[in-house]
Length: 177
Image 1 (cartoon, rainbow, N blue to C red):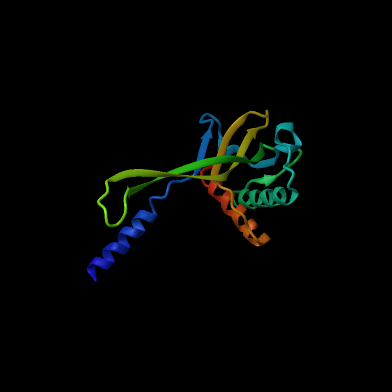
Image 2 (cartoon, rainbow, N blue to C red; image 1 turned 90 degrees about the vertical axis):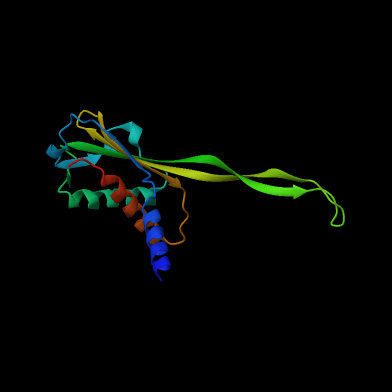
């Protein structure tokens, strides 16, 4: 019984060692506590035009608006303290694994030589990068958060909405206050 309890505890500890895929960089000299309002960078900067997927844009903007309103930051298109832009990029990636194998030549009745061999297996997948940029009122980048993961496919819109909200919350968790 003690052994089983110890194994469960080890599994829980190992699950907590999962690497955080959120990467953050920011301008340390900027006063983030002065930010009270935001607007979308796509309205001010051509580099942050919305994507071709209007539904995804709507989901991302709603998730960002909800997260920022929880922090007391309101939408103000006329005089924003910061501009928010986001980009979603897909990259084709290859990953490979080597599997060790012990092989031999000959028949069952005859002795044969054993040798070590490796089998190379190649996987292709799509890596999705979600970048969230915060610019000051002069269009200078002051904060960037990004999240990289394999692209996930969802069968129902509710799963996509939940995924986007979770993604935005994870990235903004590292936003200075």
